[in-house]
Image (spheres, one colour):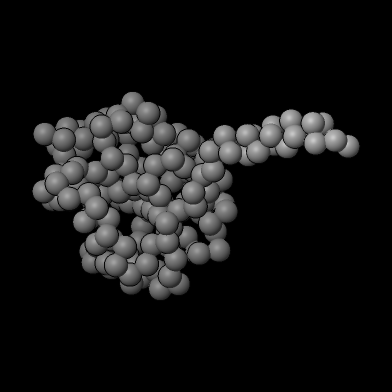
Length: 161
């Protein structure tokens, strides 16, 4: 085969590979990551959603979270998967399926999950889903359980004012 015949095929393959956006795996959430999230969002309201692949309520909530992300781009949404480090592939699949892979995502990367939970909130016992709403001064409100669209809207009104 001549170079003239091979080059167009290779060029097509390379263009295809480099134009498909690769979804980054969730960042590893370890001791100190919570403070890193707070620091990187200084003076900015945001929402931190703690979820798990084993939480049926969390999975049902994904569609609403995806809709919120699309309809409220001014609101920073951060997802934190509270799963075993070995669940990264499943986490990524769920995020991609719900069009949430392009936002900031974290996943537990330490087997001592109680320590990570305590760093986030010493008063939290690990129930899921757990959503934290931070205003720009980082005064936070934590809510356990499934929230309705109206619940989210009320919390957004509170943190975005």
